[in-house]
Amino acid sequence: MAFRLAVYGYDTDIGKLVFETLDEEESFVDMIYPLSVFEGEYDAVSVKGQNYLVTPITTFDFSKADVLLLLCPKDESIRWIDKAREQGCFVIDNSNLYSGTADAVTLLPSVNPFDMKKALALKLGIPPLASTVALCHVLKVLDDEYEIIRCNVVALESFSEHGEVGTKTLVNETMQLLNGMAPDHEGFKAQCAFNLHSYIGDLDDDGLSTHEHVIKTEVETLLGVFKDGFSVTAVQVPVIYGHTLCCTVDFNDSVSVDSIREILNNEEQVTVKEPDEAFSPVENIVNERKIVVSRIRRESLSGKRYSFTVMIDNTRIGEAYVLVELLRLFRKNQ
Image (cartoon, rainbow, N blue to C red; front, side, top):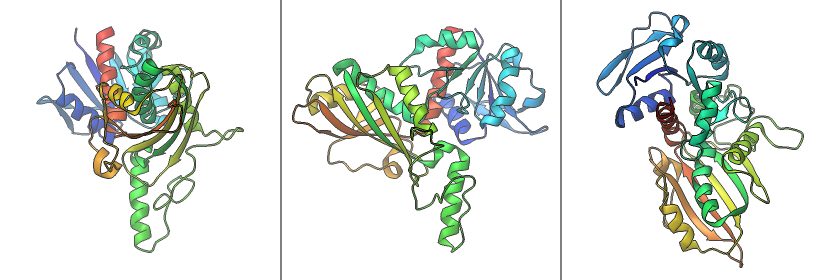
């Protein structure tokens, strides 16, 4: 059966990575419609040696496509989601418009592929945040094998979490400060370069940020609620690409470092580094095709509490790869 894909945001950082991933993998898309907000944009996208001309989204007939992939800000998603669904198109929205809500189905193909049927009924599915992707791949394996009782996470997130606005703001501020100029925050609450923000988004009455709420909701939706809970603190750090998550987990029974290393190494999308191997987002994570776990260490005499560090290329593996897997899952279920 022919699979027709429309992509709005083909020229964004994530759009480029999505098409790069499609070009690298076995072909399963028969027709692609790159969409632009501009009329008369004479551009094309090449996948598997085939050029696909750009079409204005304002005049596009969404019934021509099976899936609309939205790689744009929230205000743009709002404009097109209902129109595409009304014309029979299934929408995968990467704008975070519905993240952490019950208005759309959060899908991580390696964890809950069975929920695609619910998404198809709504004609709307959304990918989880990159931090959630990294956590779920690691925690699911450990929970299935050893039963996690509680998990605490500190997420050190790069500015690419905010898309091109985030990366450009960090780069521009750095240049301004190095040239003795006052930095322009571009909507961020404080200086971005050479600085960190103790929370991302807005705080609720209990002190939980909107971003932390999304991660917590997504993890508990995808993995279930741990007996003694799951907590997360998300901190913005002045890094362009690559998220680092510092995790502490309590297991139901005693386990060993070697057994944890072995079970994680058996997970296809995870790799475990040696304890003394220095690892950083800039040097080692950008373009890394797996989720990296390092610094696994015992935190209690009982052998039930362990801590470790998880790193992910948030744009490539945390977003683009997941989006392509969602497209593949849709085709399998259409």
